[in-house]
Image 1 (spheres, rainbow, N blue to C red):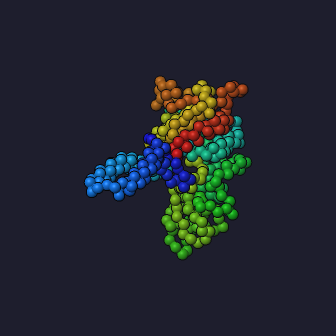
Image 2 (image 1 turned 180 degrees about the vertical axis):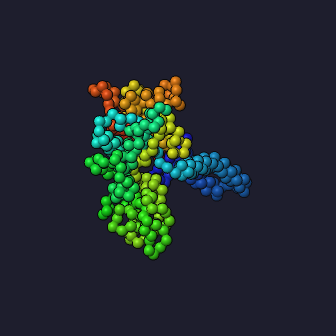
Image 3 (image 1 turned 90 degrees about the vertical axis):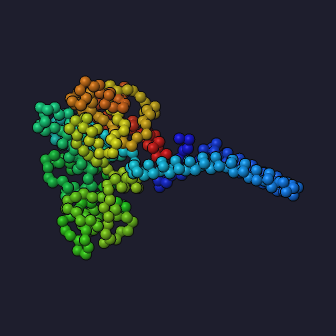
Length: 386
């Protein structure tokens, strides 16, 4: 790991040689020049026996150059391997939050519950969260009872969806009665009709395109676009629009992760449900799972944000407990029977020490904690991308 690599904005990796190696190479070039001059001076004076000496000097030079060339070649090979590995991974680091659905159970009305969900959606978008996992604390006796988790999942999904797609993707539901009063999350993929971007979210339509095969997709513009695949109606898709604004051109559907991975754009969060805290980790959609787990609690370690060191990660998860904290979630989970809550995480932190109130509500803790983690996460990400 002697070399360092720099990653430019377009993702290319440049090789930077060690200072010591550069000095050695420069020094060798200087020596070669000196030797060449002295050799030319002597050439007029030497007898035919000098040819043997010349051969010896050449061999010496060659033997000196070979180790240095080997070092350079080795470093180049190692650099190529690192680039290939990153390409194989094909994804930038992600940040997931896991939140207990029981926080909804403490609200006094549907309107207040909706407002709480709106705060979580706003916080997640502001801090560029990639995935939200809502987990239940159900015991076997409560398995058929309605909990706050499904409600929270529905509102979070609704708010993440661009406005022009909501009517098609979300049928009328009692849970959505008060969503109209919530402030929009205004994420980069929530594009207005007059805005043009290289990607747009869309929904497939029943109507068939007239002049070509494929599927019509509503992408929130004056006219629906045609994509080159035949798909069922009512499916949400990400469409590559490119720079050409001709709406008659046939477009391509791309993975929803492409705007983020190719253009570095924040493209909203995914939402999933987990029946227990342990299911959050077991059902991780990322290959290899979450590689660093952080639990938050008033009983956690007190470390200032500037001193917190998060190791380089591919998929980070930050967990927030419900009314009784993560301790209750661990106690009620059979997978953690007899275990201390700290054993479920790599680090267990108190992100708001010296609080004035006896309690910090989970939606408040989210804003506090995500701000607290901003700088440590940025430092860790720079370590991955450097």
